[in-house]
Image (cartoon, rainbow, N blue to C red; front, side, top):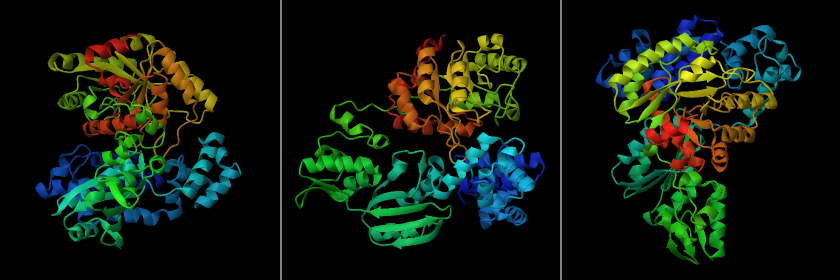
Length: 571
């Protein structure tokens, strides 16, 4: 069983426990375990093979949870989850799919209104019954209605990082198959879109039959949909459909371009081919019946007079014109990043100490980092008071004496209050090296009120960065209503950086907003928002998002060397 499956199982247990009103510490234990397992770089199964007690050494996982994880890996099931499902109406669990309906609200509408199905939930929302419940209100009711509509038409899509967790071991299995010469994952996965539907894997092999057998015989295959000589299709246990395309070397580049997409991009390239009397498809580039190109992707682009275009840009948003004019950006790369400007410690809701986060960041070769624990308004995260930050600063001062090759900035993720004021006094703000501000409450304000709230915060002369600007959680919470053009304009006018939050369930800003900021001359900063050392590795997802927004290294503030970055943040 893959780590991501174990993590999702434990999250489901926590949801059901919360619905049933279990002990909060027990619920938190399962959520902590889910996050720990979900961010491990090593598979749980390999850890258990090497050392039966290795799991107990992980933070937040004791003997009991380790035993449950081991049993889950061994049997594929968890008796506790089955027991909880038997005690919880299946329809009540379905409510959790709707953005805005978490375990607490699902329990509330179930207990107060007797709602057991999505149909009943929709009917109650349209009748205005939800808004009368404590803690909901009309805005939340409308958000729930939008969520129900989305659920009706939703196709199964997986966050990029989750899809990657399922696909990576399959790719490793295929690469290890004798005779496999070339292999690429195509589609939206290769374009690094924030969510992924079906996955296409492209492969060239001397022994196609052996590659196909390895694919359909993969350990996590739940159902084989097709098993042919050139195409195989399976559904993994997680529900992700994966298609394998076995192609000839002479057509590999054309097939890679075709199956990478996007569809609008491919159509635009084919139209360029038509103007040159060429036919372009997954088999190659043809003049009449003669193939003139297609062994490599650059050949396909060259046939229509273009340089190779990075997959992240292939959305038909001007990349062909830019390529023709020689204006394609040199996209930012992970190796360009010199610092991480959002992370949390055990002083608030992080799972590693300040010293551990510093040590892990230094090991990544960073020149600088910012410690950005929450302020007091975020009670659920144990936000720090002004005195709490001064206590933390003393720790940072001590660490600065021993860590010579990396600068540790004193910072905070300062909550933007309802009226746009900041959740720290002026004296404390003035002593921070970097002030990162963000919204964590009252997501149901109107578009005008939310925009005004954030713009006021950006006007504060001490503010350097706006964190996760739209507040979305992929598949869980819609962005709050916001006029992004106004936010970008305010960021430009007041010299504020906009964050690309690299957490896989945020990826906020989205790619279109990143491009909007870049066109307005507003720099972005990529932060992992890491709550444990393993999450520092999420930086690559933020870089993916920046690349989809056409960012070069110069557009990303934390690609600057330390001295240049210090000058940038001087206010």
